[in-house]
Amino acid sequence: MEFVTYEVEGQVGILTINRPKALNALNSAVLDELSAVLDAVDQDAIRCLIVTGAGEKAFVAGADIGEMSTLTKAEGEAFGKKGNDVFRRLETFPLPVIAAVNGFSLGGGCELSMSCDIRICSENAVFGQPEVGLGITPGFGGTQRLMRVVGTGKAKEMIYGARNIKADEAYRIGLVNSVYPLEELLPAAKKLASTIAKNAPIAVRNCKKAMNEGIDVDMDQAIVIEEKLFGDCFETLDQKEGMNAFLEKRKHEEFQNK
Ligand code: DAK
Image (cartoon, rainbow, N blue to C red; front, side, top):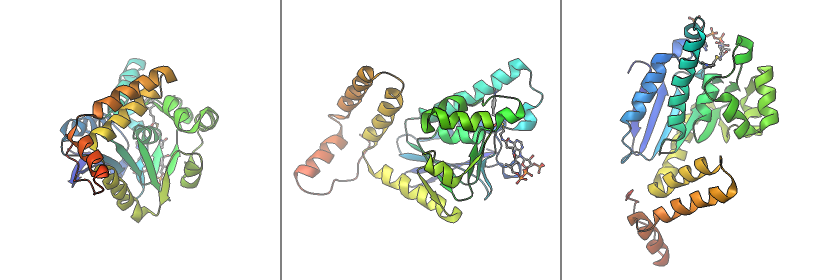
């Protein structure tokens, strides 16, 4: 892999977009590698993923403007589909995904972070969808996900105005869960990932599926989704161990993902 590195620490997988000379901008090769890394994640052993950017300046400064500048309409649509396919894979990936946003998170970078379940960022992070200033719309899900995260009014203000926001505002509007000094960001992401990794994996995965699928349907359908995923946890070893440990007033054994 030239542009995406993948490391495993215990039960946590760390994906790093690694193209720092271009502020980790997403070209086709980066998107292909991101998809290939997701193929390679051992879903039995890994319980949480972290996505971050190489260097101290950028998470991802957007889709690659150089590569996009000469695209035809058909090529533009195909490029949008390539990004959307991989981001949607990340969003629906069975494991929880934390974006550790370590600097510029613009355009495709903001969209990448919003495909993750949870965003935390460094104090130097900048978020935005500046595409209309380049003559295009956001193309990797930004027109859809930003308003779902921060509400329509704030999303429209940011997108129509191509207005970038700093970490404190991102925190205030709920785009990120917390803000850290840069050097504390990755340790904080790992700590959060480890906390998640300790919980029963089938239950955590079913929670992700229930929330992701439930948010796009009406409440009557949503609770049926929850019922099925709740039921699916029963008869698992981890459900039995978790509940027996409570009843026996002891700490549960390590969950087995079974
Ligand atoms: N693409 C390509 N290269 C980029 C880049 C980008 N998005 N962002 C930065 N770089 C490169 C710069 O060109 C520069 O390269 P060299 O000149 O050194 O070769 C290097 O990274 C360092 O950048 P700067 O010299 O500009 O660094 P500064 O600190 O001065 O500025 C900056 C940092 C983040 C403010 C600035 O680089 C910047 O404004 N970057 C562009 C940010 C941006 O506009 N991002 C949104 C990109 S548009 C769609 C599909 C996808 C999308 C839309 C539609 N469809 C198919 C419909 C997505 C669009 C986007 O993401």
